[in-house]
Image: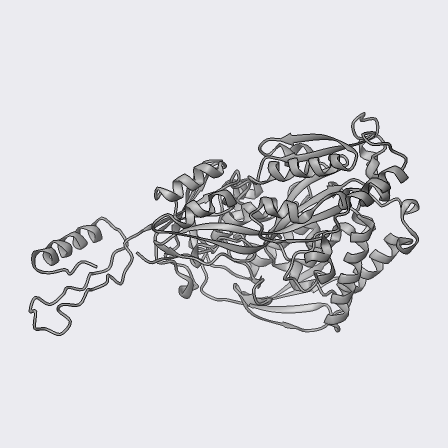
Length: 567
């Protein structure tokens, strides 16, 4: 540290005043005493205030799809837009506690009713007051709106009505008792960031789609799709303890991993993630940058088709018999895959899993995670293919995958090789950009297999609802399981899973009973290889500038107020 004395002190003070005049975030710098006999005169003096006024985050995905929370549920986009909004409350994945936000307390009045007391004095970004009317309007438009617009609408179909008692007290009444009351009401990826009622009435859903109006710590300043998103600090933010100590938060859209790393190393970024393990040493050894692995509520699965969809009748590509309708073929696929081998592509971090079994959620079965979840047995896979009636090379699987995230093509290629080694022929179709979502995933047009990243959501309903028989054939569903091909121990599969999940959803007075039912249901789904095969849960490699302090969250959410500028 340089000892500041004499004229250097004078110049530094002048420079500080100039910076203040142009509006940077800069506090007055303490001046050392000129008298060398003064106590502390020879000691180095640290500047206690940061000089950095903007934090820049590098993202690897295409950016925001919609600024209206219920119009888009993808976790990666949610990481960005949630900075403009607040929830009623949210779930902390680290300690599994509900954290109050716009609702500062709540109370269960009876088996169906929960009363919420809301914060007073909260303002939307346009200066209008936040009240219970905004809460009711937000959820009502989702419940009553079309599923084609509000993709998360089914998350709220358990709500019967909302009753406003005054501007800051509101009751939510469910149709029946449910353990999912809080999970479904205000969890990330559920579209639960509260939007202004007045703004919605003025601009409609299309207007919110283009520009947000929330109560969050950051106001949108400007954005360009697939390029950048720039937030300005909300100076009137009501949670003063979470007020950021910098003025601007920018998310830059940089799909190429090598470019993100280069920008981080040269100072163009303060924070980025999903860094290739091959770049770990380069980032870790760079001056002024740290790298770290963080376990994430994220991973990779393969969606697996178990039935043809009647809506595609007459389509030569989709109105056909899928090999994965046979349980033996589905099991052979799982046994062909060395999940630890796939994990090594991600730097050897993370753990194998079966189905959508993301730890540390209490509902996720420990039997479906870790070493027990890697069932790799290529000889048994070959035997199952032969038992199903196929000679080597005769069983062809259509396998869809995308180019994002960055590891996806590499994982897909290794999966393809593993499947071919046991005797499958694999027709792999890699789709660029958003086409995997728009052309295959969302309309439910995947064929035998589809590699897909999941993450950000530890909501048990979101993770398990697709296993219910009445949802198996909804848009994007993979179909019912043909129970005739199941072994004896899996007979009556759909009836048993439906019953167990119903218990898990309704055992409001017995939490352990609910958790046990989740575990048993997921173990059945895993053994039936229904809808999806879990591959592995990720740990994510982050690169962080020494100019900031930041600890990545389990759910991968990047909340600007978690970032602190330190110099």
